[in-house]
Length: 233
Figure 1 (spheres, rainbow, N blue to C red):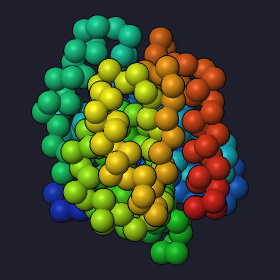
Figure 2 (figure 1 turned 180 degrees about the vertical axis):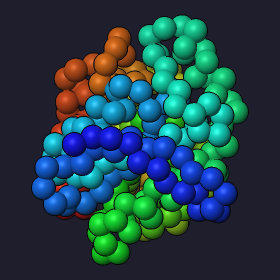
Figure 3 (figure 1 turned 90 degrees about the vertical axis):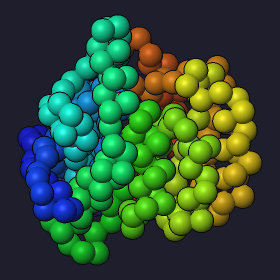
């Protein structure tokens, strides 16, 4: 069963919509899926559906609701890609983390206080997944091709629960120096695992479109599934 749900902000000054995918039986845990800069589009909804098929309650909050609620963009269409970059420039990441925390609290209150909740994010969402790991009590975090994580390493001491990062080596948004800094800063962190993907570019694990690289996407998703099985279910 799939639908949408409303979530109140932490400050209680508004509410936002999240796409929701519910498993057939009792959820074994919940996972918050964090969007790319393209909104909660068909690809992000498909990520939720796949997690629900694996037994998780999955929700994808509309993090751009303060800017343009419900926007869905296609990265393969240049004007839509350009619009996504505009929205990214206007987006308040601290408020985004607060909305992710509100989403974590909402599903945890639904499933019970002892329920485990993870996050998985892509692109902008990969960055936000790392920030969520450092700034909230989320139980497990996965980031795909997160941008600017090398600039967030000062927060790594706050990471208390497992983190998995997927890093394409030819990411044109994350250069080799940034990747080297991530490894230098995180390889010895007891809670962080980094996988590198030779020859792959940003967006390789997208569900639809020209960016997808099927073999590496499947490998990364298998690693993510194993990680969540070990740390949530």
